[in-house]
Length: 298
Image 1 (cartoon, one colour):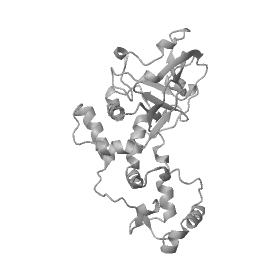
Image 2: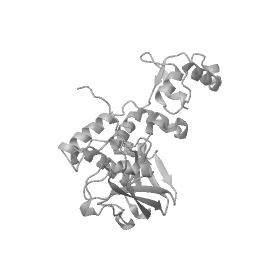
Image 3: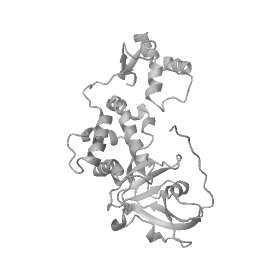
Image 4: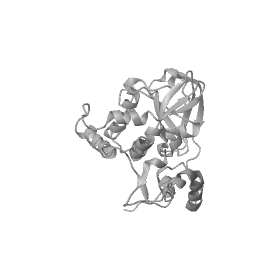
Protein backbone atom coordinates (compact mmCIF):
# COMPACT_ATOMS: atom_id res chain seq x y z
CA UNK A 1 0.00 0.00 0.00
CA UNK A 2 2.93 2.31 0.59
CA UNK A 3 4.56 1.64 -2.77
CA UNK A 4 1.27 2.23 -4.56
CA UNK A 5 1.31 5.98 -3.88
CA UNK A 6 4.42 6.34 -6.08
CA UNK A 7 3.90 6.55 -9.83
CA UNK A 8 6.30 6.86 -12.81
CA UNK A 9 7.06 10.46 -13.72
CA UNK A 10 9.05 12.28 -16.39
CA UNK A 11 9.99 15.21 -14.15
CA UNK A 12 12.02 15.20 -10.93
CA UNK A 13 11.62 11.48 -10.43
CA UNK A 14 13.71 9.37 -8.06
CA UNK A 15 14.23 5.63 -7.58
CA UNK A 16 11.83 4.09 -5.08
CA UNK A 17 14.38 3.77 -2.28
CA UNK A 18 15.27 7.47 -2.57
CA UNK A 19 11.59 8.49 -2.60
CA UNK A 20 10.94 6.56 0.61
CA UNK A 21 14.00 7.98 2.36
CA UNK A 22 13.03 11.53 1.30
CA UNK A 23 9.39 11.31 2.33
CA UNK A 24 9.49 9.22 5.52
CA UNK A 25 11.94 10.60 8.05
CA UNK A 26 11.64 7.74 10.51
CA UNK A 27 11.36 4.78 8.15
CA UNK A 28 15.04 3.77 7.86
CA UNK A 29 17.81 3.68 10.42
CA UNK A 30 20.16 2.85 7.57
CA UNK A 31 22.00 5.70 5.87
CA UNK A 32 23.67 3.86 2.98
CA UNK A 33 21.36 4.16 -0.08
CA UNK A 34 22.70 0.96 -1.64
CA UNK A 35 21.87 -0.95 1.52
CA UNK A 36 18.36 0.50 1.55
CA UNK A 37 17.91 -0.45 -2.09
CA UNK A 38 19.08 -4.00 -1.42
CA UNK A 39 16.72 -4.29 1.54
CA UNK A 40 13.79 -3.08 -0.53
CA UNK A 41 14.61 -5.52 -3.33
CA UNK A 42 14.22 -8.35 -0.79
CA UNK A 43 11.01 -6.92 0.69
CA UNK A 44 9.51 -6.17 -2.75
CA UNK A 45 10.51 -9.44 -4.40
CA UNK A 46 6.91 -10.29 -5.31
CA UNK A 47 6.28 -6.84 -6.81
CA UNK A 48 9.53 -7.04 -8.78
CA UNK A 49 8.37 -10.28 -10.38
CA UNK A 50 5.39 -8.37 -11.78
CA UNK A 51 7.29 -5.15 -12.50
CA UNK A 52 11.00 -5.69 -13.09
CA UNK A 53 11.69 -1.95 -13.47
CA UNK A 54 10.11 -0.97 -10.13
CA UNK A 55 13.47 -0.19 -8.52
CA UNK A 56 14.92 1.67 -11.50
CA UNK A 57 11.98 3.68 -12.88
CA UNK A 58 11.94 7.37 -11.82
CA UNK A 59 8.97 7.75 -9.44
CA UNK A 60 7.30 10.50 -7.49
CA UNK A 61 4.55 10.73 -4.92
CA UNK A 62 1.16 10.86 -6.60
CA UNK A 63 -1.93 11.98 -4.74
CA UNK A 64 -5.28 11.07 -6.21
CA UNK A 65 -6.89 14.46 -5.51
CA UNK A 66 -5.00 17.18 -7.33
CA UNK A 67 -7.63 19.78 -6.39
CA UNK A 68 -6.47 20.02 -2.78
CA UNK A 69 -5.62 23.63 -2.05
CA UNK A 70 -2.25 24.68 -0.72
CA UNK A 71 -2.86 24.62 3.02
CA UNK A 72 0.49 26.19 3.86
CA UNK A 73 -0.46 29.28 1.86
CA UNK A 74 -3.91 29.25 3.49
CA UNK A 75 -2.27 29.25 6.91
CA UNK A 76 -0.20 32.31 5.97
CA UNK A 77 -3.40 34.02 4.78
CA UNK A 78 -5.05 33.23 8.13
CA UNK A 79 -2.06 34.61 10.04
CA UNK A 80 -2.35 37.94 8.21
CA UNK A 81 -6.14 38.10 8.46
CA UNK A 82 -6.40 37.29 12.16
CA UNK A 83 -3.67 39.78 13.07
CA UNK A 84 -4.59 42.70 10.85
CA UNK A 85 -7.98 42.24 9.20
CA UNK A 86 -10.69 40.10 10.78
CA UNK A 87 -10.29 38.76 14.29
CA UNK A 88 -13.41 36.68 14.85
CA UNK A 89 -15.14 35.79 11.55
CA UNK A 90 -12.58 34.06 9.37
CA UNK A 91 -14.37 32.80 6.30
CA UNK A 92 -12.87 30.78 3.46
CA UNK A 93 -9.42 30.63 5.03
CA UNK A 94 -8.67 27.16 6.38
CA UNK A 95 -10.30 23.90 5.40
CA UNK A 96 -11.32 22.99 8.96
CA UNK A 97 -12.72 19.59 7.99
CA UNK A 98 -9.34 18.69 6.52
CA UNK A 99 -7.51 20.12 9.52
CA UNK A 100 -9.61 18.06 11.92
CA UNK A 101 -9.04 14.94 9.84
CA UNK A 102 -5.28 15.50 9.95
CA UNK A 103 -5.04 16.38 13.63
CA UNK A 104 -7.14 13.50 14.87
CA UNK A 105 -4.38 11.16 13.65
CA UNK A 106 -2.04 12.47 16.39
CA UNK A 107 -3.69 11.60 19.71
CA UNK A 108 -1.54 10.78 22.71
CA UNK A 109 -2.92 9.32 25.91
CA UNK A 110 -1.48 9.77 29.38
CA UNK A 111 -2.57 7.36 32.08
CA UNK A 112 -3.66 8.20 35.59
CA UNK A 113 -0.63 8.75 37.85
CA UNK A 114 1.66 10.32 35.21
CA UNK A 115 3.82 13.19 36.59
CA UNK A 116 4.36 16.64 35.07
CA UNK A 117 6.06 19.83 36.29
CA UNK A 118 5.53 23.58 36.45
CA UNK A 119 7.82 26.33 37.79
CA UNK A 120 7.42 29.90 39.05
CA UNK A 121 10.07 32.48 39.93
CA UNK A 122 9.83 33.33 43.65
CA UNK A 123 9.90 36.69 45.37
CA UNK A 124 12.83 36.05 47.68
CA UNK A 125 13.55 32.70 49.29
CA UNK A 126 9.96 31.79 50.16
CA UNK A 127 8.59 29.03 47.97
CA UNK A 128 5.05 28.93 46.61
CA UNK A 129 2.65 26.42 48.12
CA UNK A 130 0.79 23.82 46.10
CA UNK A 131 -2.42 25.91 45.90
CA UNK A 132 -0.41 28.70 44.25
CA UNK A 133 1.08 26.58 41.49
CA UNK A 134 -1.97 25.94 39.34
CA UNK A 135 -3.00 27.91 36.28
CA UNK A 136 -3.16 31.70 36.72
CA UNK A 137 -6.47 33.29 37.77
CA UNK A 138 -8.38 34.52 34.72
CA UNK A 139 -7.99 38.17 35.72
CA UNK A 140 -4.20 37.72 35.74
CA UNK A 141 -3.92 35.45 32.71
CA UNK A 142 -1.75 37.04 30.03
CA UNK A 143 -1.69 35.99 26.38
CA UNK A 144 0.54 33.01 25.62
CA UNK A 145 1.40 30.82 22.69
CA UNK A 146 -1.71 28.67 23.29
CA UNK A 147 -4.09 30.77 25.39
CA UNK A 148 -5.73 34.14 24.70
CA UNK A 149 -5.63 36.82 27.39
CA UNK A 150 -8.25 36.11 30.04
CA UNK A 151 -8.50 32.39 29.20
CA UNK A 152 -6.23 30.48 31.53
CA UNK A 153 -4.50 27.20 30.65
CA UNK A 154 -2.16 25.10 32.77
CA UNK A 155 1.25 24.83 31.09
CA UNK A 156 3.29 21.85 32.27
CA UNK A 157 6.55 20.24 31.17
CA UNK A 158 7.70 16.65 31.03
CA UNK A 159 10.59 17.15 33.50
CA UNK A 160 12.06 19.60 36.01
CA UNK A 161 14.89 20.70 33.73
CA UNK A 162 12.51 21.75 30.95
CA UNK A 163 10.18 23.67 33.24
CA UNK A 164 13.18 25.44 34.76
CA UNK A 165 14.21 26.59 31.29
CA UNK A 166 10.66 27.72 30.56
CA UNK A 167 10.62 30.17 33.49
CA UNK A 168 13.51 32.12 31.90
CA UNK A 169 14.94 32.59 35.37
CA UNK A 170 18.13 34.63 35.85
CA UNK A 171 21.24 33.73 37.79
CA UNK A 172 20.60 33.38 41.56
CA UNK A 173 16.84 33.57 41.16
CA UNK A 174 14.80 31.36 43.45
CA UNK A 175 12.32 29.13 41.67
CA UNK A 176 9.51 26.94 42.96
CA UNK A 177 9.04 23.72 41.01
CA UNK A 178 5.72 21.95 41.44
CA UNK A 179 5.12 18.29 40.73
CA UNK A 180 1.69 17.41 39.38
CA UNK A 181 0.07 14.02 38.96
CA UNK A 182 -2.98 13.32 36.85
CA UNK A 183 -5.91 11.63 38.58
CA UNK A 184 -7.60 10.37 35.42
CA UNK A 185 -6.53 9.43 31.91
CA UNK A 186 -6.21 12.36 29.51
CA UNK A 187 -5.99 12.58 25.72
CA UNK A 188 -3.85 15.32 24.17
CA UNK A 189 -2.88 16.23 20.64
CA UNK A 190 0.79 15.46 20.02
CA UNK A 191 2.11 18.24 17.75
CA UNK A 192 5.79 17.38 17.98
CA UNK A 193 7.80 15.22 15.59
CA UNK A 194 4.86 15.02 13.19
CA UNK A 195 7.27 14.23 10.37
CA UNK A 196 8.58 11.10 12.11
CA UNK A 197 5.36 9.09 11.94
CA UNK A 198 5.62 5.62 10.42
CA UNK A 199 3.47 4.96 7.35
CA UNK A 200 2.67 1.56 8.84
CA UNK A 201 0.85 3.25 11.75
CA UNK A 202 -1.47 5.09 9.37
CA UNK A 203 -4.72 3.89 7.85
CA UNK A 204 -4.23 2.74 4.29
CA UNK A 205 -6.50 5.45 2.90
CA UNK A 206 -4.68 8.15 4.89
CA UNK A 207 -1.10 7.54 3.75
CA UNK A 208 -1.39 9.66 0.62
CA UNK A 209 -3.31 12.42 2.38
CA UNK A 210 -0.73 12.59 5.16
CA UNK A 211 2.15 12.88 2.73
CA UNK A 212 0.28 15.51 0.74
CA UNK A 213 -0.03 17.67 3.87
CA UNK A 214 3.16 16.71 5.70
CA UNK A 215 4.71 20.17 5.26
CA UNK A 216 1.49 21.80 6.46
CA UNK A 217 1.59 19.79 9.70
CA UNK A 218 5.27 20.62 10.16
CA UNK A 219 4.44 24.32 9.76
CA UNK A 220 1.79 24.14 12.50
CA UNK A 221 4.24 22.25 14.73
CA UNK A 222 6.92 24.92 14.25
CA UNK A 223 4.44 27.72 14.95
CA UNK A 224 3.62 26.26 18.36
CA UNK A 225 7.27 25.68 19.25
CA UNK A 226 8.56 29.12 18.30
CA UNK A 227 10.52 30.80 21.13
CA UNK A 228 8.71 33.66 22.86
CA UNK A 229 10.82 36.81 22.68
CA UNK A 230 10.64 40.02 24.68
CA UNK A 231 9.77 42.06 21.60
CA UNK A 232 6.81 39.84 20.69
CA UNK A 233 3.43 41.49 20.44
CA UNK A 234 0.25 39.78 21.65
CA UNK A 235 -0.77 39.84 17.99
CA UNK A 236 1.99 37.32 17.27
CA UNK A 237 0.20 34.72 19.40
CA UNK A 238 -3.22 35.03 17.73
CA UNK A 239 -2.68 32.37 15.01
CA UNK A 240 -1.56 29.65 17.43
CA UNK A 241 -4.26 30.66 19.91
CA UNK A 242 -6.76 30.12 17.10
CA UNK A 243 -5.21 26.74 16.36
CA UNK A 244 -5.35 25.67 20.03
CA UNK A 245 -8.95 26.80 20.39
CA UNK A 246 -9.78 24.62 17.39
CA UNK A 247 -7.89 21.69 18.93
CA UNK A 248 -9.90 22.18 22.13
CA UNK A 249 -13.17 22.33 20.16
CA UNK A 250 -12.60 18.88 18.61
CA UNK A 251 -12.30 17.23 22.01
CA UNK A 252 -8.65 17.12 23.06
CA UNK A 253 -7.67 17.85 26.69
CA UNK A 254 -4.53 19.71 25.67
CA UNK A 255 -1.82 20.12 23.05
CA UNK A 256 1.74 18.86 23.35
CA UNK A 257 4.59 20.71 21.65
CA UNK A 258 8.38 20.78 21.67
CA UNK A 259 10.16 23.13 24.08
CA UNK A 260 12.06 25.82 22.20
CA UNK A 261 14.35 26.33 25.21
CA UNK A 262 15.24 22.71 25.93
CA UNK A 263 15.28 20.62 22.73
CA UNK A 264 15.14 17.39 24.73
CA UNK A 265 11.93 18.42 26.49
CA UNK A 266 8.33 19.18 25.70
CA UNK A 267 5.42 21.15 27.09
CA UNK A 268 1.68 20.58 27.25
CA UNK A 269 -0.94 23.31 27.35
CA UNK A 270 -3.81 21.80 29.32
CA UNK A 271 -7.20 23.27 28.48
CA UNK A 272 -8.99 21.98 31.58
CA UNK A 273 -6.88 21.21 34.63
CA UNK A 274 -9.52 19.23 36.57
CA UNK A 275 -7.45 16.04 36.31
CA UNK A 276 -4.25 17.66 37.65
CA UNK A 277 -3.24 17.69 41.32
CA UNK A 278 -0.16 19.43 42.67
CA UNK A 279 1.35 16.94 45.10
CA UNK A 280 4.49 18.82 46.20
CA UNK A 281 6.60 21.92 45.68
CA UNK A 282 10.35 22.37 46.08
CA UNK A 283 12.51 25.49 46.23
CA UNK A 284 15.48 25.80 43.85
CA UNK A 285 18.18 28.42 43.37
CA UNK A 286 19.61 29.01 39.89
CA UNK A 287 23.35 28.63 40.43
CA UNK A 288 24.65 28.69 36.86
CA UNK A 289 23.52 29.56 33.34
CA UNK A 290 25.29 28.57 30.14
CA UNK A 291 24.79 30.61 26.98
CA UNK A 292 25.61 29.56 23.43
CA UNK A 293 25.20 31.75 20.38
CA UNK A 294 25.18 31.57 16.62
CA UNK A 295 26.59 34.41 14.56
CA UNK A 296 24.04 35.82 12.11
CA UNK A 297 24.89 37.57 8.87
CA UNK A 298 24.07 41.26 9.02
